[in-house]
Image 1 (cartoon, rainbow over the protein chains, first blue to last red):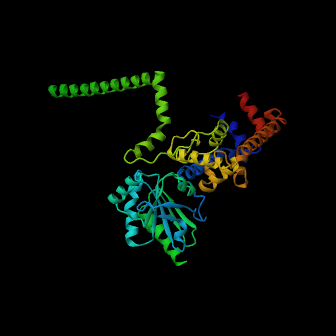
Image 2: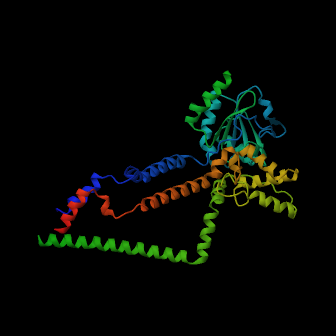
Image 3: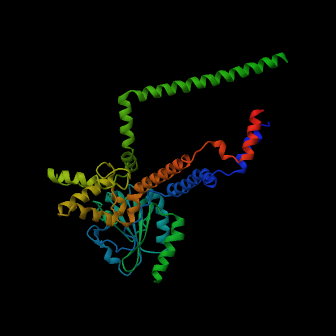
Length: 197
Length: 204
């Protein structure tokens, strides 16, 4: 018991050189840990499937394609000049398209915006039957049989939805199925402000 | 009393028996799984399966209504073929994101390979083809990002970390040698009073 006191005393009374730095060093791993947590928190919560579109605020790619319901008639992006419109990439083979379809139908019924369908690499007969079954929200659909127009739009999965303004500039792109929240919170306000502008 | 005790004992032992049987069953399952994996052919098949999942999930989703296949092009000359193969390994498939365009079985990868071929047929250079796809799909389509101000940190980051680590190493090394150099007998570090006290105590 008596031995302990004098051995302890020097350590407490005389600070060793650089003691402050040494204490700081004990907290360094903790600081690094929290730094890592912060980075991983942010990094792992990002969705790698959501690739920012390279086409945002770019002119809409020009295309001319045959219409799904009238093969002898064509449609080109230039036809929509002066209007705010939606381009929706869909296919009868696309399962998520079925999920978003009621929301497109509702938008079409409310007359929010003209929607043009880009029927992506689909069999025309299957596409028509699909629209008959689930409803047709499109002003018209065009057939992208070899998928080259979809490539021009940077499409990498259906469904995808583009908002195009009066000057023919892409203002917004939504990847994946549109739902009620996106329609209400994003698409409708954006379309309204573009229509005003 | 006695009968109750016995009954409870019986029920307890039966739960133990059930638990033991359960453990045995699990152990047997694990063993059979190990032996299943151990047979090389199966393992190979399993790896093949997991590698093709990306393609097959696509296939499953198409089983109701099929996506149109990528239209075929006439075969390319051997030189062009080699050039395209190399170019495709530098481009990313956007569906199976950790695969290059050359490796991916996804439908979109087929379309993009065809697009690359068509652009090459138009006489576009490799850089022009990359720029074409980059304008549509963004930087992400390049498997090897360009060196530009935006990606300096990405390219230089590892070297920065290495330099930082080396700096810390040298700093700590220097401090250690500096601390070791004036090392005289530790006893003299104590003030004379305490030194005396310690000696006294040690003598006791």
